Image 1 (cartoon, rainbow, N blue to C red):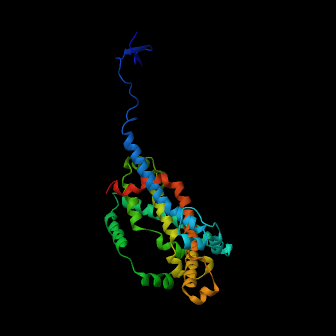
Image 2: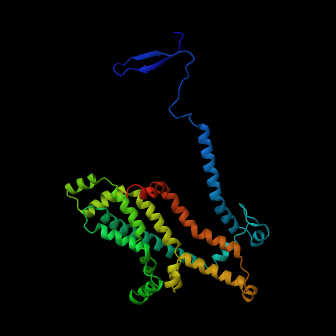
Length: 320
């Protein structure tokens, strides 16, 4: 046979049937393989440029933390360290035991607060997602009101110090951020989008509300829980305000408060002529080193849950 042929398997017979192809007919690859190649290259190139633009400031911060103070003052910031030195980190970690203790407090508060906060907010959100709950609408309005208005700084300080007596305890770093109305509404929206047939089947099989919640609802809500957990962990890790207000014991100071005090001391030494003559501190490099020490653990944690972030961020637009 002079013409090119194509072999195709017959659905009813085990033999192959050959169909002739006309000369000059181009063979087509998989659908969509070669379409819009130039457009895809342009999109990937644009995304690569955006990624470089986002990573460049971070690289400059890390580079400045390993550069000498004189090099930054003379030549400015760069992507690579100039006059490589670890003096800024040795200055911040002058007493390694205090740094490790501050990290231990922050890790304990962040892990405990995030887990307990997820439990409390998910249980409240699941209750609000139940259509048969009679107080569903009033409680939702109460959450929205609490999200828009708060009690103010002075009443909150009096409540925590005079009535609850939580000053200089780890509870004061956990309880104020335990439930966020915005995250509760996000979780409620996600729970409402879950198929109710699965929950109804579990109840028919004899499962109670707690078993349905822990064994069915929570495993199906991993993207939402991971996203809310990431943002809640960021709130706990980056907080220094509660420690500044309520923590006087140095052994209970979180890492953000510890680093804040270092920056305050450096700024005071740099702005006071008498102190500047006694103490010479690398102001710029220490600030960059503090930034690296503050964001390092969060960047590492983000790498483990980034696959859930894109799916979880869109939970607010699924259903109203």
